Length: 335
Image (cartoon, rainbow, N blue to C red; front, side, top):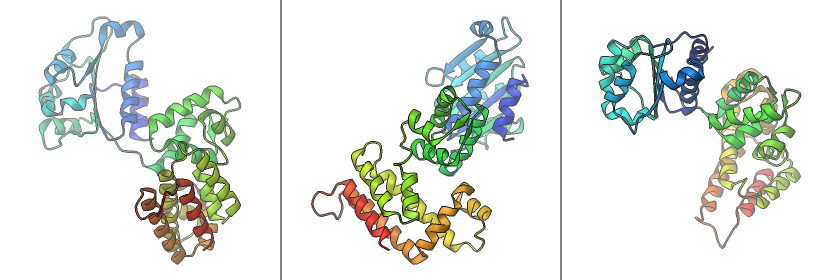
């Protein structure tokens, strides 16, 4: 289990710390831990008396400490949650005195997004020494399918590889959106299985016309399918911006360069090195046969040229994004 999983488990089992200093670049884990404390520690009746929500842009550190030092009125615990606590960063070191002697019946939570405690100062050392600090690290694109599996499992669902690829492409690395979409699907999925059809119907992603399918078409040099997808993109530009497609293709062919340099091209090693689901390794094997290393480096150049042209640099006349994509597909498949 991860540190995040252990924290959530302990909170639900009422194994509570006096201080939770939640910090880092990924808001999702900070929000989930804070929300779990808000929901699980006190009953609804107790919250009205013994739970206080503060906002860092509305209070100062002294006010936070004053709230934390109060005794619970009708329950065994008092909960004080400071949202947007990063606004207190200028004077956050003033919590040092409280950390030295925290109120044992209070659970004090700081949502310190986008910043980190100063480990050189005493308050930072106290947080680290007592293990009251949790770093919420930024989520990378390659990690999203892993979280999709976890979120689906926690919702009592399963999700296949193509559905994960579709959702990753559409939702990106915003774990909040990913989590919320899984919760929506939990309501509509009847047999417990998230499929491409389910994703298409409920999230608005075409299962046949998307960047994931375009990657596959180019890997197999399926011109008919690739141009069909390009046509759909041209007809639905808001949902399929060229800049996103170019970024996806750039990542695909950059990964293909890595594939060509691997000595161990076993399925497991390729999946680890490229950060992909083993299910998709065969697509890279096919793509590698169709595009030797020299061709891949040329394709990378073509992608950069297309990106520049899409920004209006070096293009003659008014060229649409659809025309640029068609030209790019033609050049890639013609290699």
